[in-house]
Length: 174
Image (cartoon, rainbow, N blue to C red; front, side):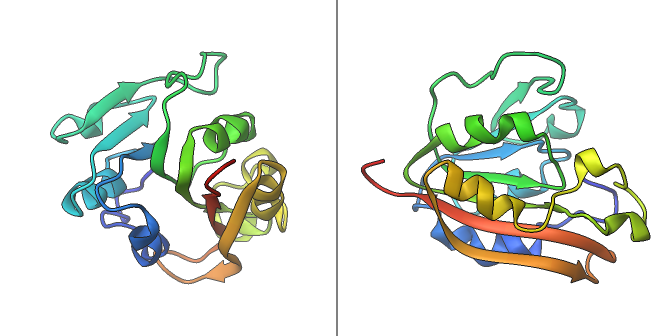
């Protein structure tokens, strides 16, 4: 979820947002206060913002879905497909197949979260919420996505952390 010090969109998301088809619908998963949903709305994308707690999304001009994805609730989006999916600072591995399946042909996944080693800098520190090295690349390959960009390691902004990031695309015809 988004912390108070992260009010603007992530630099990783901003640098890859142009890969999402112009005017294509974007899913902001674990949207928090909607920083990425607002960013994509500003780029003229229809947006779906999904989170367990949608109180921070009330003033967002977007489709807002409240769903607790970690407690056995079914995937709330059915067979809907998106031209872009953004996930930041969130990890629930059972969602990986749903994320891949929700990408439209040519759709782009922009994913950024914490990796093993982050416990040195604070939370999250539970290994269940930290990616193993290369795990996002493995996820992309296992689900037929083409990795377009990948980064793993220590970052200084918006706070010191160990992160892993991937931009992956569903190839047309898959």
